[in-house]
Length: 400
Image: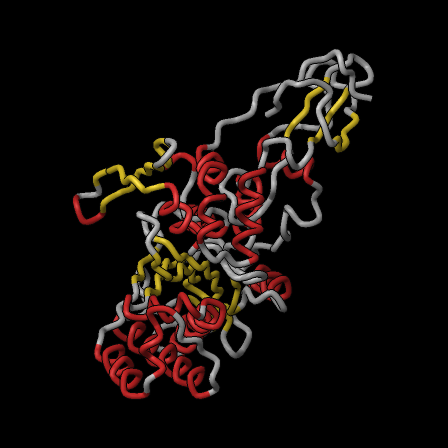
């Protein structure tokens, strides 16, 4: 049992992001339409690690040591509790890297003219973005001029800019080698270079706009808000003409500082949300001030003030639709055949695939692997701790 005489371990951590939501979300929600998924995320963020979700209590029956922690919300939109999941994801992806080959970082960005339509049709148009980018890479990598094989692809959706603006784009890690039609592993034809950017952009544009026209023909698009004018056929035609006339130029280069660095880079988007606590400079009774990097001004660090409700609105636009997967795997990393393919590649290259080190690991085991922290053993006498859930702490102190 937990002794009511013992003090609770630590004080409540300061999360300015959470405090901004506690301060400003109620008034924002009272004056604006909020979706169910946004409401759920906001509720989780406001209660995360406050004790309102209960506590995890650890107690040593041998020496009487105890530690009580306020529970995390584990909502994917909350920046206060994603660090262990991010580290787990990095471990999983590192185990899938093919030793000795190049990896490429590709960014597929959509023209800003599409923003209003995408915002009103997030699920179908985010799906289209994933599909068009993946099919472009698979088609061109199969071309013997570039690789002549099916690569491994990890794609992560990113919807925000440094100032919380709506800026949907896709970050992709592309392997510089793949499996050809004979089942052999071959590498890209040219080291440090894989596909010409203009070829990549032209095909991506064609596949995305072909899919967009098909969605309109099947009446799968909504035209609310600023996208309302696109219901008119003449406006739609002019809209498409503008999109076809633009050059869609993706970014692509070989990853720097090793492939593990590429995985860590992607993890920032896979398990982090639009802004972290470290970028929130201060929260007042009327404002939230964030820091950002101004890439147009020699990468200078600057501060940007929002009114409280502007900050809430800017953040909520980046909460993904219910059940939508931000990260997707394709090519030889497709979930349906990933283990089989990696095992086969390992045999071909005499570097056996040892599997996912985090698979089926319990939370305590993961924390020990990632941080070297053993939450099951008493730090004082090293006996086994008893751990369980409690609804309320044993005294009025606040926990970590």
